[in-house]
Image 1: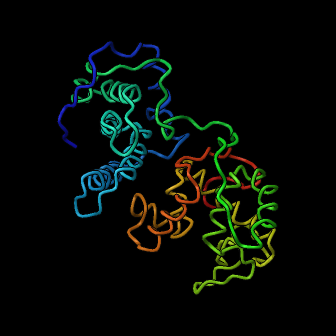
Image 2 (image 1 turned 135 degrees about the horizontal axis):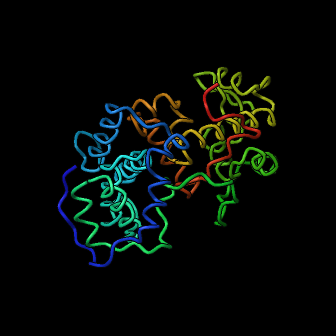
Length: 300
């Protein structure tokens, strides 16, 4: 991506120790702990998709999704992804303006010889306490999400189902509020719900997903919720806590999200993602640990 320079404020370079730590965290050495580094062609396609979304070239302009794709490239150690993500943060595109995080990203790209990042590095400042975007950070143990007003569901069954979710969700390291939002959208808290595609029960498990997560009776509320939570937990690990991608994958399947390097261009899926965002306000969810009730992250 070729972008004009946008001066911020001219200050010092990041401390050398900070830069070393960032490189250790976000370079290729840590990519295996995150998503596997894309092949050259795959990374080029990922970046091209981000550019199209950023500028609305042939697709609806979607700055938050462009930001998410740049962040995936940046985490994999790609200098162009690091520079593009820094530029968007420096200019408040798709997220709140964050000069400090932008400077750290420019430092990462500049250390790999990216010329525009080297130029921008002279115009930005990174304090040691400035965090990188959440998608760039190493996985951390699951912690409770910050308090916020809970969505109110009017369905009569929602209180009973909610009580069950509050007990089960922590076992899978899933925020109960995310699970409740999924149930509200999928079935409206109807344990007997069946879709035209034969998705069944509260969390609308198709037979393949039910089998994948060992659900014998999809119409049993507890079994269904356990299966849905196991799938959510797997998706949260696979997509590193990116709630938008998790929502898209829950609706359209993770293969479709991988194919389109983001939310697929399906009207149903795009509306699903928007509905979830209205019920669940967090864009990033803590990444579950590699072991536990939900099983391994990789596909069975």
